[in-house]
Image 1 (cartoon, helix red, strand yellow):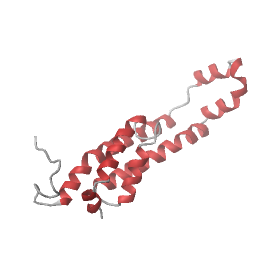
Image 2: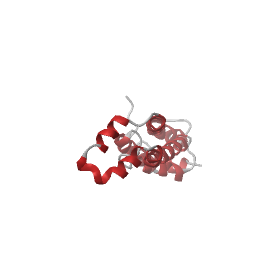
Image 3: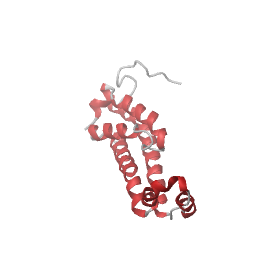
Length: 151
């Protein structure tokens, strides 16, 4: 296995720093795209499926939770489910498009925004799996040779 740590950009590739930058962002970008797309699709499918009426009835019939009846009815309604899913859908869309731009070495700002969005706990790609992926992407994006390769 070849060790590229500490090697100047372009020293072992005829293409120069652009090739190293493309290789450096490739794996974290692909992993962010896959995980954010899976999370986005999961939330879309969960919105399309009917709410669990059995669980709602169990909660509504519990006398200890009577004061929260209106909140539970809203959460289980179509509007409530959409409102609660909207932040996750937006964050994962931002993560996906940021990772796509990162993979193509375009729009450094959007790539950084996507990596930062992935770090948001319980909203990022595959819930908390996005945290290490987002940190990895931020570390790669902060390298000077990668930053210089963006158009």
